[in-house]
Length: 226
Image 1 (tube, rainbow, N blue to C red):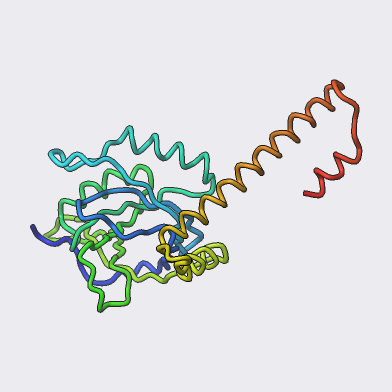
Image 2: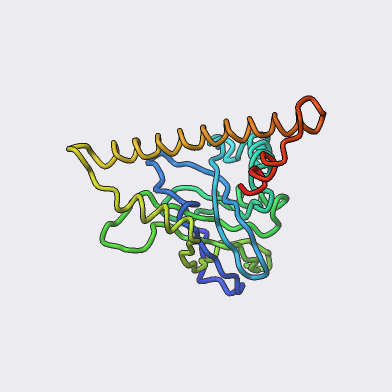
């Protein structure tokens, strides 16, 4: 299948990829959307979600995409669909149909290609970011993929979590995976307890507002200090 790429991009966009927004892709080819923010010429990729792909029609399940977009918008109101991703070794002409289908969501989407054939001798992430650029070929305007450069960007929370996982060491003869599970279980229990306390405070606060129980100034001050 013919390649659909040209030389490097000259759009002036700066792409910043956050490590939590990308992961090592599985062997079967997968498709999805990348979400994040764009301020001027700076594009930051923060997260992604997988999409359903119909191979016979070379199209994405649009109702599923819109449902996922709605759900993510509730959790990340400041994030927008910036483009899409798929696994593969090179951008192909057939990928442009999927690219065009997303232009009603983002008029200038970009394409992130994740290469599952990882070369451990290379230090760079096995991915390539493409923008689309209009070229006139034989008098006919055509969209083509052009490569864009990117940088790895991390915020403090990402650095802390990444550093913590990287330095996990087995203890008491257990594996690193076992220790990680135990650590995450402890965090889950702490969050569950915190949620119960907040729920209890909420019920008491509403009851005091309604006059069902006496107003406790000390309790209100304690909640306000949290």
